[in-house]
Image 1 (cartoon, rainbow, N blue to C red):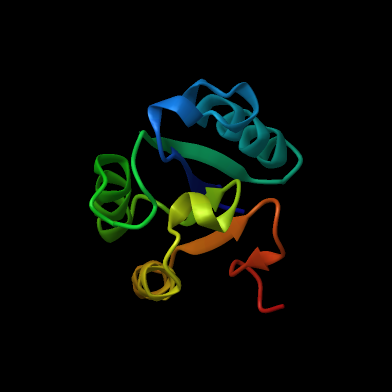
Image 2 (cartoon, rainbow, N blue to C red):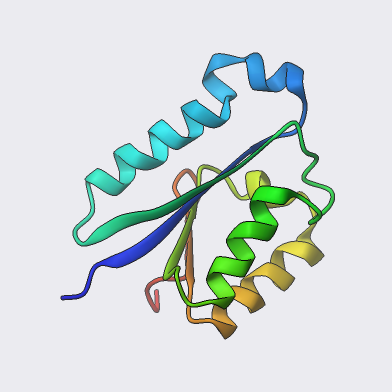
Length: 120
């Protein structure tokens, strides 16, 4: 079985939040890596972080870099700690999911029941 190439995406909206240990990008990444280690055949292809950026906009350097890698078919799966780390806008969320699907990339939020990598 081919390994699933995963992107880890983390975000905190303010520098102040970035200082809070349990909510930091590093803490989110550690929890995502723990999830990945419990799965078979998922390998981390890249880590994309946006510390100090609002989830109200898609204009974020880490997100934009990840979207370029998805479009270049380097990523099979995007994993976030919570959906609101990816975006706070339902409209933007569905737009991102459409981009992921267009390039056959699945999406998992590890703390919410949202996983597009399986039919269920």
